Amino acid sequence: MTKVLRCNDLMPGCMWEGRGNTEAEVLMQAAEHAKTAHNLTDISPEMISHVRGAIQDEDQAQAASSYPDPSITNPG
View 1 (cartoon, rainbow, N blue to C red):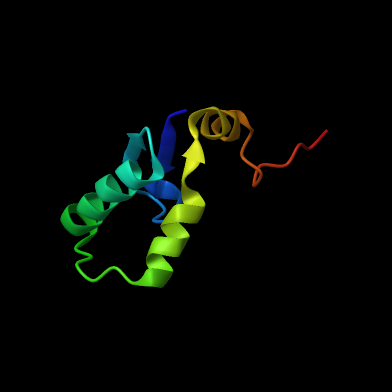
View 2: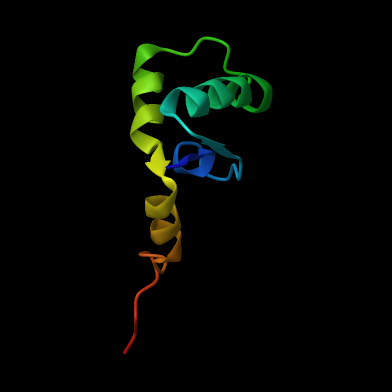
């Protein structure tokens, strides 16, 4: 199953997405993205833990993106 990481889940406003067959592949892509897009050259173990927690299976990521925005309330 394809793994997905949406940078927006960690860095609001960043629309980058990484995909890979394994968590390790996605982590490698994320490390490169963090360096080039966010100038993060020193990635701490805590940051890696947060990134790992944000990686989802593709079907879970798609389901999460199809839910309505929880900040919008239904006036009805």
